[in-house]
Image (cartoon, rainbow, N blue to C red; front, side, top):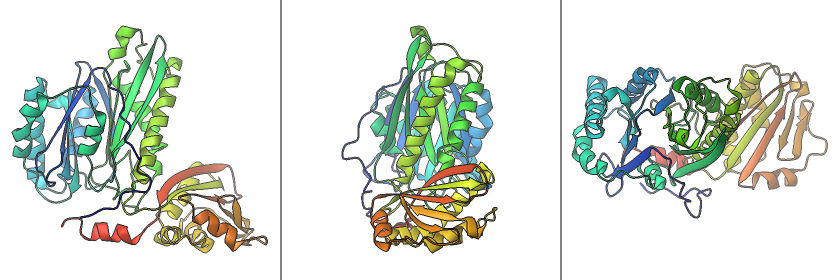
Length: 413
């Protein structure tokens, strides 16, 4: 299957720095793809804490169930990720694969299976052979090193057209700490938790309950505010690992989520998660446009987000964006169908800085040429004012093109 490179793909993939206490390696296991890496193994220093959020899909994958079961333990020594097969809707075979894979990683790294976390992405409904992992694990472990992170990002790709990486630094009292992350996702994207697959590591000494609170809050403001096609994956997994290695450099050990010393770290994490989530949308299958939808003046922020998502998930809105058509009537339609408080005669709509509708009708100064010029840009802002309250929300989405249909029409081919 030939996939066109996203117009937002970086000209050069910038390598991100290592994180103390984290080692990684990739391998070719031949799970689905030939001639490319499809397995990622990460090893963490002893004492590494872990937090995570997973899909709220009622049909979760076997790896998601494994992570849910062991996240309460709060400790991690290993992470095994594969692309090409989601190990979802695979029944007892899927659960057996997860158990055998975690045990194999545990033997390789010298830890307990409960300290190994798993994630899979790819085709749903096809059994995943654990022997594929066992055949490459020992050799892969001999190559564990502090990078490059770009190799890790490439190994977890499916229909992605470019690897997604981001990094930040923050002061944690006596020392600077580092945060690095990767993500994958291009289709089946409407997260109801965190993201498709994303893995964050930091050398900050942060207790697991604090890490969990930070990650949950950050995901709500980033990955849970994106949509490509309105479909929530069975495999959505966002995990964060904190090695604590910066403690020996004087970084404060954080055990209370209300600790004020945590503020710079929280800001850095939120920024990192937002960048990764935007990179996912900018690699949406077949996309040509990156779209921000902001709804203001709603009765609550929850109501604003629901309306924004109705706009961002509308096939009619998304195809109009693809055709560079300033069809504001479709925005009106999406607002009306959201099931949230809205009054037609108070509604105002902007494409970029061009107001196209006001007080329930087309703007008297409406210019088709000006609105079309906005729609011809690669990045588009759509803003809706409801005039009912102070609720506000922004979500990010993309257009819906013929290539999206082509990609998903032969995904299993």
